[in-house]
Length: 113
Length: 445
Image 1 (cartoon, rainbow over the protein chains, first blue to last red):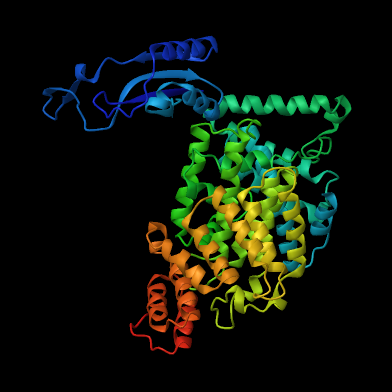
Image 2 (tube, each protein chain N blue to C red):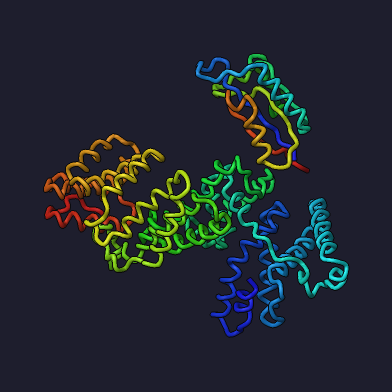
């Protein structure tokens, strides 16, 4: 069963109380996921200031805006899709992710059709 | 197990017999459901076919006789019903294949002769007895990925065998609301694939408290109903005890589970004396100790010893030990208050909470006098958790009354009256207020 781990990091302008994670920790985690044979896909997202929002209104007009720069305390920083037997296994992998200490991980099953 | 079934299904005279049969099946329902849920990974499907298998047993056994292996009969019948159901629904093709493979494998294990002899009329005669997989189901129902209120509802539904309307009544919510809640929880279990498994030993210490908490919350809701006309909803407390007994059988070596069962037994033993003739609550000091359930106290006291022996005790065990001291005291005054204060000290280090501190202060007042208790209570005045807590106001009022500070006691009783949730509790507080000799100044409903 496939699960997406949505890695929400504290925004870069967040107070300094946020836990720091190192590149080495992320690389080690990435290697563990790949070595375990559960890796489906995963990306780390570029900084939020590079984001652009697109919406098409009722008239078919494209509305393009810079952002979003939501006031949300946490922003999506990356994701993994893993293939594991059940939710407990997915939660376990999420808990081991460095992002779980620096922010939160939302675990969502990938819909099956 | 066979004897229970034979007894239940053997006699055929009317509704009394039917309710006996249903009582036996209520227990068996949980076992069957647990075994099916683990195989299908789907509580909905498991529930449907478990009910159908039990309905088939209720229809056939009184006339055809109880099969030699009733548990296996139920299991095989339920699985046949599941195959029928999955055949109609092509989405489940993969699960159907697994199920059929499993059934074939079991027939092969039972040997070629048995396999040839098995027909639709004699399901399960050859299979082994039903394994008890209810522990897995306990952990699924109490999974931290489910909302807390859903965990309790699911446990009552799946393991205590209550119907959805019964669960709704227990929570004082409309049946529709409860049905939606249970459906939502089952959907999450199925679609997020919450597993039916007992956590590994390294994970167990984190997960078991959740299961115990579900059972204890059912008990406390039954013991001190948070709202509504009645003070105690005994049936709910008894369901909690039944669940704790099942859990204790499933985890005989677990001292925390023993502590929880002990605590509930030692508290429930006082049920008959807890309320007066008009349903008003009677506190420990005025309860008729002759009406306490001695057999239950003895059972609970034995369990406390188990729960306290062989390692650091759980908070449940310490609370149970406090309850045991009360239960074993001949009178309120002759209670071992120094020991009770000492146990509250232990409890405060394990689960520091203003409510525990409140109970400790009351015990100190019994050991050292009302003034000493009052000093401790006033020290807790700033606790947000106690601001709306009527037992805090009532305890303060009691101590002020014992010190002869009547006016202050009256205003503390008034405060408790404003906060109390059930009518019997309010009646009790009004009576204490009257005993002070000051008139009630604010009208209450």
